[in-house]
Length: 562
Ligand code: NA7
Image (cartoon, rainbow, N blue to C red; front, side, top):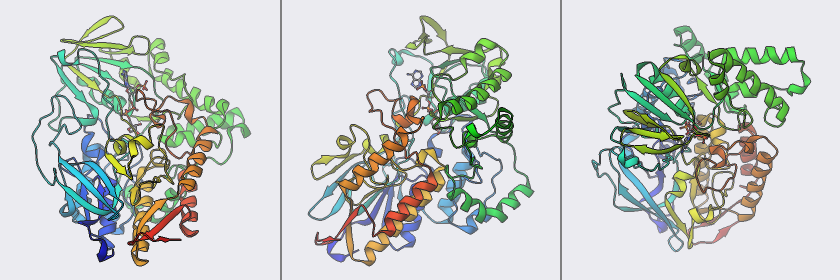
């Protein structure tokens, strides 16, 4: 960076999850002065917060792991096909130790605001101390403060938002919440000491991935489990199991091919993407293919044929096959029907990956309640009331999801040239390539809206963005450039491309968090890029090679560089 434009740091990174950790490593390696801020007391991001029983990754760990360092991938052993949260957090800690990341991370520090100063061409970063737990505002969480870099301001030439896509919990407010005398727990901010649910009466609100995993893990130990389901979800079996030594050795031998195949795939993990539409096949062929996919398990199920997300009839074939599996697993036909999704196309809401979820409803003490017809009306001192009926419970678990994709960005007070980012995105996010938003120079996002992010293996998306940002900043330094900005017309085109691709698919038909539909008042816009990870990577590389098409640059004096 030019010495005429001195700042506390070259780059401030917000977030010390998988994205922020890798971004720190890469930028530091490239010689930049970097500081990371995170509200948590430790690295790991989503895997730091989401400690609920049964929390587990839904993409195989061999793929959901860093690829950037050969020694790292050779030395780390995943114990299971789908690792559980403690093991993933241990992996994040291992990476932090191995690359000595912590010395440049200020933990327990929340970034409150970012203000762009046009005169000095720098960002001012406003921070505040965060609490050890409950920083996200969970009622009853301890208010212990660990000041660590909070309450201060810093300047930086660039800011990278590595804030995660599912990191701001959605906390619905029910009347009487404060009256409830039992224990209230959020899956997204689970007490670090755990909660003993043995022999207790428990209510769970929410049946997305977090709810499904929690319910499965706790059902056996509870005295009574009341599940309040507003919308049933498709769940594909994980077939999770311990990996053998032979499997681990084979993976380590094949890592180069595995990673290459992941980067070349639509989901960011090699799923054996189907190459033909379902309509090209006989009923028997389709059945055989779906049997094979079901036996293999995992999210690749929806990639069986090329037209699953564009042809409603093809989609319905896969949906009905999945419902048939529910009927086979649940003894009571009425319960099976209640658990069967019918109101939206398969995979237009994020599918779940389960291990024995539906069988839980065969237990006599587990009760499913239809919160779409009998909504939770209020909490009471002894439990909650739904559909006019009172339920007495000791613990209420809220598995109610997140303000996805934009929430973690717009909750920071970001301003540039009199414009607030939250205002700019009031009617949905507007970005160029999911990497920058016009009017906010030198502000970059890892896995931002309008990039594939949540529709992919996040690790592939993260590594691609981090490498791209590192390359951009290195190139700028070499050319004496200090300012980069997305061109408004390029942004308009990219927003249109995103809307067109999503609009041509069945994706917007689900009232999903992809659409912001789970947040009251949030504009319904399909937020991730729906054209596939491989397509996206190709487009970004093409624009970059074309003299960074869609971006404009300036040097320290403010002079525009074509
Ligand atoms: P999700 O998938 O958004 O699930 C949240 C669940 O909570 C979902 O079933 C919601 O029903 C339900 N919900 C939300 N608010 C209410 C109220 N007020 N009453 C009843 N039910 C409610 O979040 P998760 O944490 O499970 O998973 C997020 C992602 O993490 C997941 O997709 C994976 O990618 C990992 P709805 O469907 O909105 O009717």
